[in-house]
Image (cartoon, rainbow, N blue to C red; front, side, top):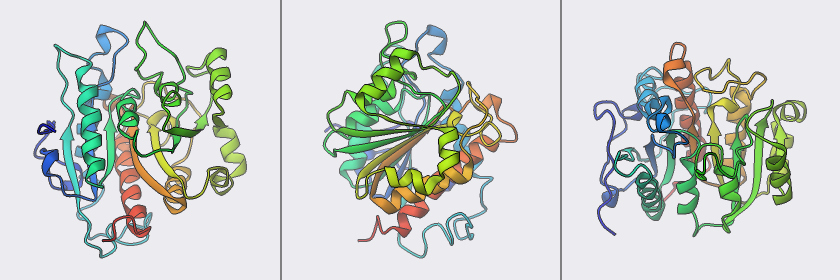
Length: 317
């Protein structure tokens, strides 16, 4: 394979000051943080939208989370690495090109394949919700994958303006991939983007649609019981799946969303049940943020994924 190199938006500020590794062919890590700023736009104006700034914003805000990795984290129950020899790197961003605005999807897929080939867990910062599509493709040798989505919206559109791989279609595209098995769509609420046809198509597939209200009623423990044990899971988090009080910086805020506590309980539960092969957090619009709370929350979610995986023995040699 030819050399894979990413392009960091801000070489002086990696996520949590983790080492920067742009050459993925030289990657030696347990976890790789990678930015995917660009989706597949529905209009020319969306070619560069506010979400393209999110990887840089989350990296920058991570400096506000902690003064050092030796600090005690009460979400995790200790220091991040729990005294273990764990290596986390920041792999920079997948570059885009004005001359080939879809070409970055191929680069994104290749990057995730390379990261998974080394055995590392990819944690991706978007970008809009189109960016998981090349990630899903890159997992085609690792099925069956149980896909878990936290989102206000169903994301089962077939196309918008003829575009089939944009931010309203990732779960429908996933459902067409042979290595994607069960799908759990959590936190769905409001009118959102779903039309009747899309709801019917999702139900015909067998998608497990659990609304925000139902999750609140049954609790996270009961929700986790519905997800098969000892599976291989991929987690995609749309920032608008969380309540706007927790993550206000989104384009489509919807009241009554998932709480931070529910999100962390879900992450810990999935990691304890089986193998989380990767996750992403998308749809953050930094210009709408309040005191960087959305970006800081995203950073804390990422740290919880890493901390829970460490404690589950994911990276023991």
